[in-house]
Amino acid sequence: MSKIHIWTGNFKSENELNHYLDQSDYLRAWAVYDNEPATEDAAADEEPSPELRCQFCKENELDDYDPDAMTYCFAKNGFAIKEAASVIPTDTTQLRKLVNKSGIENFNALIAYEDDNLKPQKDNGQKRMNYLGCIEEDVRKSDSISQHYLWAGETKVNKNEALKMINLTEDQLITIKCQYASYKKRLDEFIVIEVPDFNLAESMVLAADSGNFPKEASTILLITTKPGLSIDGLHVGKLLGLEFIGSF
Image (cartoon, rainbow, N blue to C red; front, side):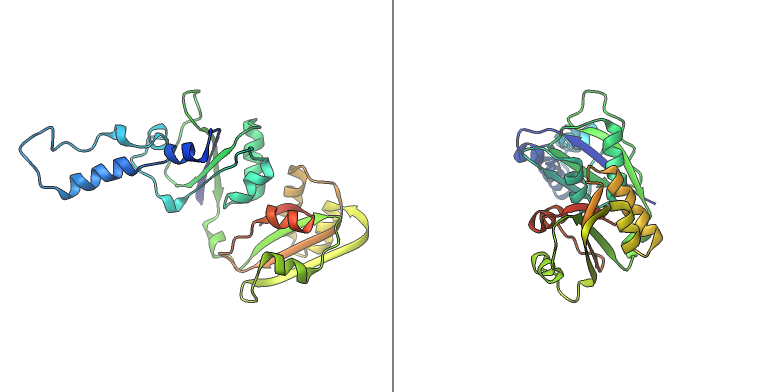
């Protein structure tokens, strides 16, 4: 299982968040230490002070972090839960549950870090970011043959127009299903009818139930792509006039 750790917080600006994660002084000091010859001055030969680490590393007792394993973002006006779920590379249903469980409603910064060995402590009131916990995912998901994106609403959508807006190529797309009904249906039933894979449909229904989505819809848009592609579901939803339920 792969563990993705989640933190939320509030910062005055994106620059302030970047500073919170900035390891440049510490890494630069280590580069000098590793490449300069030793002297006979004990003080000069000391390893770089851990106080040079960024605040994120200090709070989580890390010497350094892998930037390739981290996703972080800042939203000036704050995140809604479903917006937070759209920018973190993990299962949207699990992320919503984690944020809901925390009871934290207002935050404008979000950090996700993948590390199987990290064991951060819950926030004690002294830390800049609130640690919500970790999401465990089956590492085999990264080798899956497809990624699914689901939107729902009342706007009638032409699938060719949708593909143009998303700018998908034939090499990236596996299937697209755009189903419109002349009347509104219960969203959970609509999903079950249109998604033949039971496990996939169940995950989608759970995501729809756990989010603040309408209980009825007349349109469902389901796009399946090859893995490794990231679609901004919220942005696409706004363009199409649909609610982004999540990625699966």
